[in-house]
Amino acid sequence: MPFPKRLIVALVLATATAAFAAPTSTAQQAAGSAQCANRETPPPPVDTSEQPAPGQKAPTPLEVPENPIGGDRLGECGLILPPNSAQPPSGTTAASWLLADMDSGAVIAAYDPHGRQRPASIMKVLLAMVVAKELRGDLVVTASAEDIAQECTCVGLRDGGQYTVRQLLHGLLLASGNDVAHTLARQLGGVPNALRKMNAMAKELGALDTRAVTPSGLDGPGTSTSAYDVALIFRGAMKYDEFAQAIKLPQSQFPGKNGGTIMLQNDNRLLANYQGALGGKTGFTDDSQHTYVGAAERNGRRLVVVLLRGQQTPTRIDAQAAKLLDYGFAMGPGGVGKLVDGAPQPKQNVVPTQSSNESQDTAAATDPETGRPTPTAFGTVGLPITAVAGLGLLAGLVLFIRNKRAKAARARRQAQQQAAQGV
Image 1 (tube, helix red, strand yellow):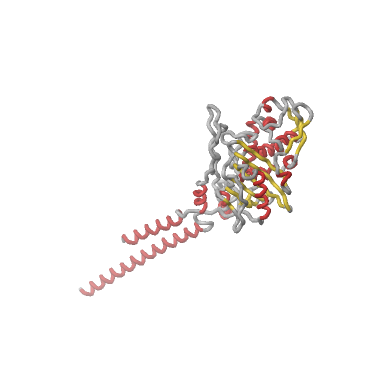
Image 2 (cartoon, helix red, strand yellow):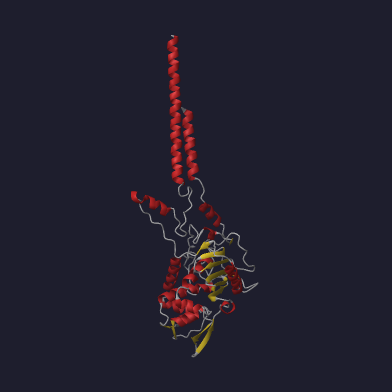
């Protein structure tokens, strides 16, 4: 019977199309985020600082995570606010910025938080974190001619001069010494080894937009970070007492190049000008423009603010940071995402057993970052429902065909009986 056969094929194809071709919200978000200008790399450089050395190739861009770290909304590249929130202060010039609660991890507000930018000297926060983890503060280090030859800003180390790691951290964080950054990198096993440790630390934190290519934050091929990552890194560094104590010093005595001592002044103006300031770090290169990360505490609440690729007009970048901090302290505890407590762990390919099917299905449907069910084409229960519905449809078609054939058979028998009676 040709009609039922065609009907079966059409209905089965329609069921399969409806089940498997439904677009997911994650796919739609990925398509939307692909339009973000700096989704994969920072903007093109304005000078030659990122040209690879002769005979070398530029590193490939860092992989973009399938799901935005910290929550789906943080994959957006415009202004991201909680519902019914006041607008952020005017005059913020940064191409990317973020406000977050350092303790709860709640991201309060952001603008293109995963947009990839250049860090400049705020990369020294990541170096300082590795140093605080691996080196004793009273360890004595001897400076070399190679340290002194670094592109400055420089503290003014002396070839053969001896300094404690604690003194070098003060020179790194207060005066942003590139000579100090190189000295500390050597103490970590040399610059390549120090960079490996810095990048491993970033990955461990979940800062997957970040690639350190110089210990100091000077631009180089493949350099990358994001406002989200800088907040993660600063939050992690503040857990080390050596770092937290150094970053909040207004000034510090340092061995002078020609003997005696000099006074290092902290270049973070918020320390003196903002109530509850806990410390911060500034940065600038021609390619990165002005960068800033800092934190403050009020009424037991600690906030971190990050601004990347900003300008010094109409107000200084630190003054823009102060306005954003005021805005954050005035907002409630809600947020648009979360600073994660570590990098997402890859899902293991485990063959499910009969006794563990249910738990395996539950784990596979859970987002490792947020703990929420992962959106799929079917939802968490839609696939079984679709399968049952399809089987029911096929069973109904089979019954329909059988009934149709039974009716035809009865009609033939009646016709045969009538013909026999007529004879």
